[in-house]
Structure formats: structure tokens, C-alpha cells
Amino acid sequence: MNKTILVLHGPNLHLLGQREPDVYGNTSLEKINKKIKAKAKSAGITIDTYQSNQEGQIIDKITKSDYDLIIINPAAYTHTSIAIRDALAAIKKPAIEVHLSNIYKREDFRKKSLISDVVLGTISGFGENSYYLAIDAAAAIFAGD
Image (cartoon, rainbow, N blue to C red; front, side, top):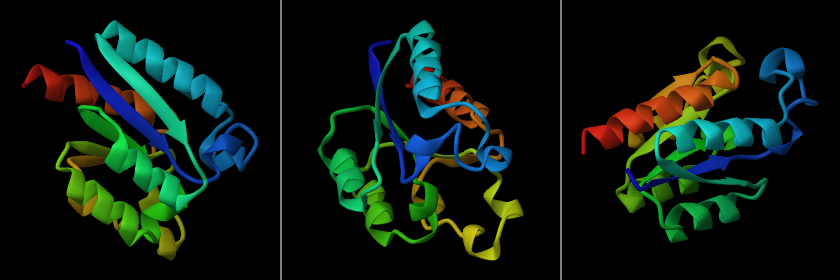
């Protein structure tokens, strides 16, 4: 297939496995990234993962990286970053929004995504499986190319 996916993890996701495990699960980001890469490899897809707590670094990765599709968990920036939204809109590449928790069952301020209108779709509420479902969706998108 020879396709590349950029998987972007937003702020505080480096704390997965430690931070609020009742909300975000017990699996570390390192383990999630390993599973993402293994799942993608079996589908013939190359994965580049990146985590940042800084909005500008996320925007730079979106706009300056070479990939065929992006999977992004913008974390708290989902609800606040017009700049990340605008970067996703500007690149004109397919993107999938991912959330570990169901943002629509959380605090009111988390129920609004500034990202969702510029991505192909959103996978939310399935814990770490949200990422793996996004890999499946990406593989299906690539197969349709």
C-alpha cells in the first residue's frame, strides 16, 4: 500500500497510564504507539507518531510533515484551538479526530469540538481502541483510493 499516517497526540497525553485512569485508561502512550505501529504495519501502512504539549509544534507537524492522512487527538486543544483547526483545513489532506473518552458525556466545555468540521470523522469514547479503529478507517480509506 505504501501509505503514511501521521498520528498526533496533543497536550498531557504523555501522561497516559498515570493521569485519570478512570477516564483515560491505564495504558501508557508508549504502549499505545507500539500497538498503533504494529496494527498499521500489518495493513502495509507506515506510521509516524508525535506528541506535544505545545500548540505551535502541533501546527508545524500538521503543515510541514509529509504523510497521506493524519490521525489527531488534539486533547484539550479540541475545544480551544482555532489555529489547529485552521491548519487541518489548510493542508487539504484527510484527517480523523480521535478521543479516548466520549467528549459528549463529559463537562459542557468538552462537548464542543472546533476540529470536527474539518476532519473526515471522529472516533470518541472507546479508550485506546479509538486509535486502532482510526487505523482501520484509514486502511479502508486507502483501499478506496
